[in-house]
Image (tube, rainbow, N blue to C red):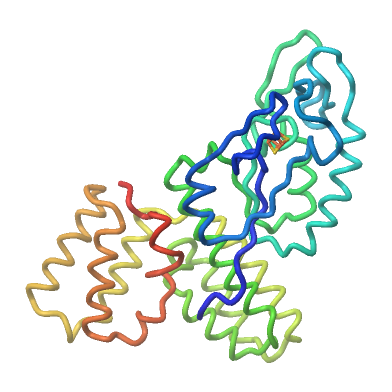
Length: 318
Ligand code: SF4
């Protein structure tokens, strides 16, 4: 199942090193710009510059009700809320045609932060309960598009989950481009079995039932319902326990092939992974090696073993 179209990801422009910040600087993130950037096409968005504010400009912050804050300039107190909201409403509509598989926001920004942005009370006390004005508009408009922000992506587990989700949804978008047949959906579901199980057995089972009943639905409804479940499944975090179960399941496919010594070695690394002594990449690499060596046809097609390019260096933490 090859990637046909590049995966398109929205991103806060300053994370790519563009000098668009209020002080004329940037917030270049090397992993996003240089590593992940090799495999995705970014669609940069800088709400403050795109809504007509200059560079440099006065800094701003959120104030008032954390559920519905105002966007104010910090020194002169100019209220930019309506201007930003009006621009954001149009921008998210424009983004519909960009076919985004995800969005990476700049953390803590009153325009772009997706959570825990400071909101100041009348007395000047901050509470970390706000969402940037543009980020809120984006997430309300695209509830099914995976979102993350630069700070959270430093957490290896969150990073892994997000990147796996955008590549899996990228493959899903490719599938949806063509004729929507039950056969193609069966193949997608089959090839993603282990990957889905590493997130949520419940969703995998429900998706399986949907696929089995596929002929009783219109292709449009079938794909829509499957896509919704896929997004929900990918939001459930893969854990060490779930990965261990998946790896043991995969081992079962080699019952007749592996020598006693090979099996012992694999079990040793699986146990070390279970005890968090080695990262997931260790037993996975060994399994990949056996898949190639014994030409295991079913596992060869499982996206779990190659859900994203190796160069993004995931699955290498304990
Ligand atoms: S945080 Fe958002 S608004 Fe601020 S410079 Fe970056 S992209 Fe622009």
